Image (cartoon, rainbow, N blue to C red; front, side, top):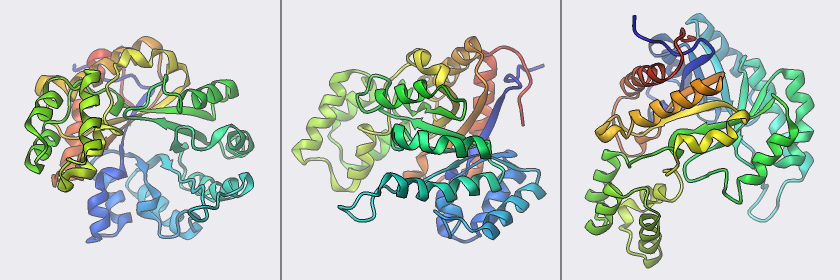
Length: 337
């Protein structure tokens, strides 16, 4: 019998994987999300800004319709991506109470759709808002996850205070979510090809391909950006090198792991040359298995920014790969579904 992931790990898929299909609107967003439960996985992480027209104050009827549609297929929601719009205009920042009021309807919608938690970027809420929202999180039995990803690390001056705040709260309703875009031994093959077609200088491409984790490579990326010589066609894509693609190892997560309740298994393509897709998954499985992790692990595809592949096929293949890699590195068990 093939090994399975532990029973207290739940593999999920993010509706974000289907973002191009949702925005194309050839089918309703609800039909697309329901289709995920029907043909990919029963547990789904929602991006409500793509799904509910009434977001960020979702109407009960819209939330109920999705909940009933998912339930009919045996589906359920894990985490709902929340939004915290801190400004009412380019210069006017919301007060603490206004920020809380902006978030509260989203928490109620998450509870109504029977999610287990909501997600915000690391540090955006801040300690004061976290303390204000704690009683409601307990009342609704929701976990607020703060997400760390890409170039962010526990040593980052903008991240460390937020990690300290979560640790000081010592509350299971406020946890950390780690996106494994932090753990990239090499850049995606398809991404490098896109930069090559876009006209990025050959010398930098060689460094990106062979020396991604060398700090000098990031210096070269920054130098090209500052010179103004990044080809306009790939300028937005180029910024991933500074923001969305990380250079950490799974072992670097050891110190923050007690705060972590969920992972995004970010992938960009499925070209596993040199283990660039599978190795982070294997390393993560070993780390989590040794430390008794419980929580969700969600397939999240970011490569649709430059690829036109079918999201259902990509996600199914990625989930199969993830389960194999994680199970092969973790204690024997049975996967939650």
